[in-house]
Amino acid sequence: MKAPMLYVVVCAGGVAGGVGELIAEARRQGWDVGVVATPDAMEFIDAEAIAAQTGHPIRSAWRKPGEPRPLPDPDAIVVSPATFNSINKWALGISDTLALGILCESYGWGVPVAVQPCLSAAQAAHPAYAESLAKLRRMGVRIADFTPGSYSWTRALELLRD
Image 1 (cartoon, rainbow, N blue to C red):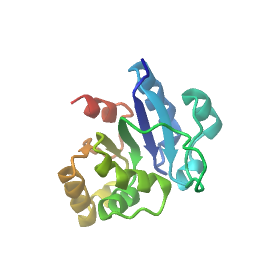
Image 2: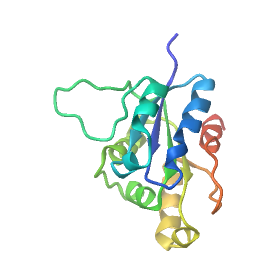
Image 3: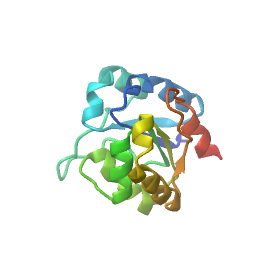
């Protein structure tokens, strides 16, 4: 039996280099994992190590028409770390990167999506952030509580089980 496919969307948060911890836990839980990174996140992660860990190439750019799809369709998506910028763009339906395009489409796919925000307390205080979270929650997105100064790589996986 084939393992369910989990997309891990990685944004350019300061903790992004630790995404291997999330991948390892997801694999322990029986997921096949594919990573989709924002272009800026590529500077924060070790793409070669992640590709070796997942067995799949990291996706960051749109594929050309006619090119094969490098990852199977997702059964679920985790966004970790989810930055202020990406959360707000996603809620507005802005699809200017592959990662945001996948997140915008996820609503229509009907797959569960869990998010672990990573931003500053000052950004979290901005009214656009609260409005974006409310909109994403209305769309069925599961959002982990945000606590400045701490980060949980596994909380988003827990939200998929809830």
